[in-house]
Length: 317
Image (cartoon, rainbow, N blue to C red; front, side, top):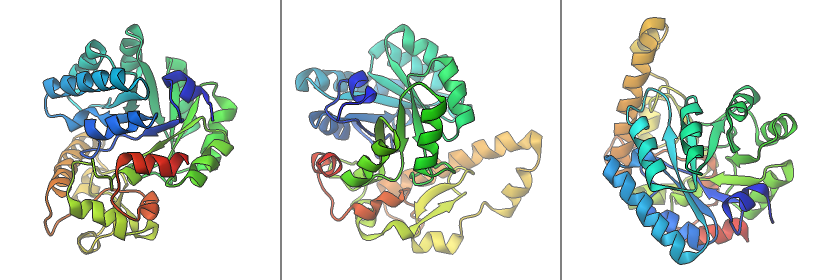
């Protein structure tokens, strides 16, 4: 099926492998490109700017070799990411097909990326923000619905896609609730011109995480996904492991109290984001009794740890 997304990125299928913190890597994106889809990696998965540059260079070489697919990077564009300016500079110098922005104004990213021919897609959860980023020149909207993994939206896929399609003119890429071809077709039927899929790729052979994390995505189901405030201060979906059940999903009482102070709120959220990201990093790379695994309800369809290409085939048919 041809859509504006597949035409824009020259894809065989209108599918983006979504950027996942500490999960997405070059090996995964390469296999996605081999399958004719796009892949995206969070810039924050790289500790240094040189490592980010090396990843972009490796993916450029792979794309030239395969002659298909596309690759991009995800930028956190608010103050919780002090590396954002340097990351953007590196990506514009090295080149990539697209950048996905999250958690802030994409204006600086759009202006810089467009000067060097890079497309910019923006995470949105409602019409108000979608119209703002379209006015700033975004090339497409990543419509994050209430079935997404990680930081999800509040609206259901159908309602969100139809709102954005009616009131915006740029392509809508649906994020959340896709683990099978039937679910992908459902989102396209609502009017999306592509899908962004993350959680099904956690249980992939190429993912650089522990076997326990991958097996958890195979063993647990959609009903085992809960929202917790303990990762970033903003509700985030995780697997409801015994440890998560023990500590609960609400922020500590002191943190909740400090968040009511307008002067302190920003700093409290930045501290919670830092602590949560460190905890997620430990969980992805080693198993402890404090394991917290981020995932979305679409792990329902992960029945085994498989190669990326097999997962893509399951999604596109």
